[in-house]
Image 1 (cartoon, rainbow, N blue to C red):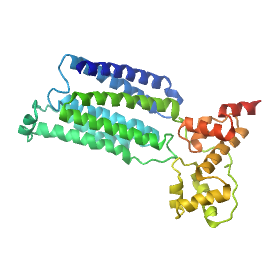
Image 2: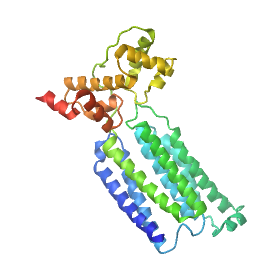
Image 3: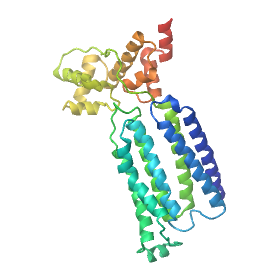
Image 4: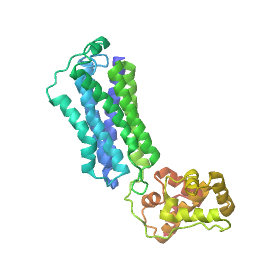
Length: 352
């Protein structure tokens, strides 16, 4: 089992270095610091994994050594802090850094400082009997409390408000990032409590999958463009004003560019209209001959086409982001479906 764990750690180190290098190489493509942050976090993770390889192999530390070793309790607080930087950058690129550091990082930094630099003498715990026997000692319950705080701190990512007007990331991906972050925290907590080798292996696999998925999303999916309004008319699909509900629907869609929101759904639209999804869906069918999804897709793609016809030099990613797409693959697929050609082919045809 030790050999498997070491092999996975080596693979993890190589993976982290590659991910960090790819992100750093293309860091200037974005209008934020997301790739800088994720690249540095990848390299720091690779460094700690390398240290753990040597220590595990020399048997100075392992998942079945003493419980709650201080370095395994307090050093991960550094990762806890840095893991917050990436999602904050893609959700709120203009967020107040001072406020984040004071209210989010200060408590964790204080815990790390107290745990590693205040001269606390830690009792070595080799069994659950040792834990129970010394549970009343400050150094024991302080370590336990820190682990619990780390576990619940991960949930804070779910509380960060998402505003599609400010974010260039897909909400679904942000939720997956938060879930992955929580899973890593739960696995770390479980390793410290149960000291099972298979938990260590699962932790390493999840760690690798987490970084690879974030790197892939950053490089190939997320539309990394500055969010700014485009100087173009809104391309609207005509509908017959045959009923009051459809009129209210169009007014709501046009207000504040709601048709561009990546969070828009038939259910949320019906709730805002104080109706139900069946009636609203029927209104789309009756007045446009399309379903809600078909209408929104048509409207977004036609808007993109109209802007490109007037301004072929317009940045495609910026256009996709502006109309509500947060993933490049979805935007390309829908454009190909509606226009019968890729965006690149469409621009090439305009330039002939």
